[in-house]
Image (tube, rainbow, N blue to C red):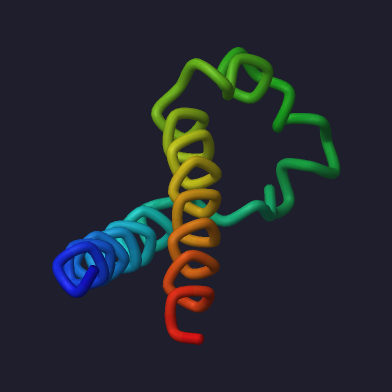
Length: 79
């Protein structure tokens, strides 16, 4: 049981570091003055799910789910 807790703790730390790096790699959501004139509706704005930014968002969501699940498992195991 102690080995499993140690492995989960190491995975938890790696996920938290990866989550921090991925969140810092993402761009801000504000479009600036381009949103006033409609310049934000470009090809890249419409197909954001297939761009690098869209991939980072999907990867962030997956890591957050893993982070929460492992945090809950580690918390239940401490009782």
